[in-house]
Length: 236
Image (cartoon, rainbow, N blue to C red; front, side, top):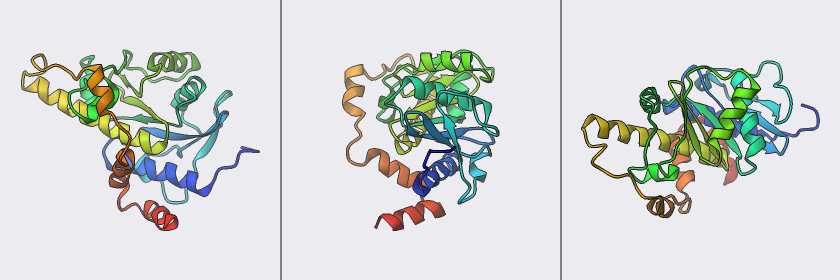
């Protein structure tokens, strides 16, 4: 898109994030991730299964306030609507975490039961519609329901996770799936109703970003990726 400068580092981070999400089993043939470039544009990964995105394969610059470019997946309009409403959001991920998916089919979202679940404050909204979002009105309604939350679960259809950066959003996506794993195991053991969720005060205290919390998970999830290795060498 004319006038929008995308650095090699930004393109690379989107590709590395896409492959990391696939390697972790958080996406499969379906899913996409994006990074905000400025108030009016974002970069979305290539319209391919995320694990198959090759090094150097560029993403596409998408306007926040106008029609999707040719070749961009229809549900990327969800990213547009979130970026319009959330100036704090620097990255959006559309994923298919398996434990989250199972819970969602029962109309449930993970509660804050453990440390990693505290980042969602037991208030993950459920989009109670299994259909794909293929028009702007639906995407706008979903973004309104997300409101100020870091994640939203779509019934039988995966999740939306946002963060101030792509590093944060990828990390929170992994946390969301781990919270869903805990939730499912507690339900399977008949313990879910016996154990309280963490209080809002407890989650606010526990959900820290200091100590390279997000960066260490990013390093873990991207370990071995050739472009992640390249980026690390360039930073030294």
